[in-house]
Amino acid sequence: MVTAIWEKYRRARFDFYAWRYSLSLPRKLLLALGWACVVGLLAQARFYLPGTPVPVTGQTFGVLLAGVLLGRWWGGISLAIYAALGTAGVPWFSGGSSGIPLGPAGLACGGYILGFIFAALFMGHFTDKYVRSRSFFTMLGLMLVANFVLIYPFGLAQLYYWLKFAEGQAIGFSTLLAMGFIPFVAGDVIKVAGVALIARAITPKEAYNGEVDRGKWASWRIP
Image (cartoon, rainbow, N blue to C red; front, side, top):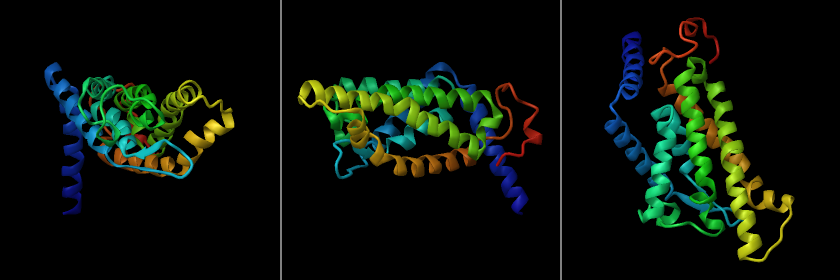
């Protein structure tokens, strides 16, 4: 019984990834738009930590899973759609805002937005190209890089230049990190670990599009 259930689950996740990989262009665009809506909903979950004007939002979950679920290019396209429509007036940025996000509070949908796109492209590339990328520890490592290397620099840059030119505050690098990075590290690591667990559970451990390491997954021993 348990074996039969597991086999159905294994087959279902493989079928989903094979299906989304072979979709026509219009359907891939619809899927990307649908995930942009999910990210917009997650952006409404936000709160502030003491000592920083930058809000904590639920967008990290949507951004990191965008590439995993939509694959190479399409995760990034989904976040680009999210950015473009939000700037055009769709109220799905953090706090139900839209337009060109300004100020420190706009980091969740302003300075970070380029990072969101690059992070989704990064995760989609590895998910679609390497079966071995779909283990928990590999996903965890990739997502930590996406979160801290590809997203944060854009947010920190906006925070710095906003404070310097709009608020007239010249702050040092250590102060910048204290305001826009350090308070979020522990929470982000926990969030990334949770997303990596989800990604490990939903991704197939078989090749569905001619991955470069196909045929090696059977001897895979990484959890």
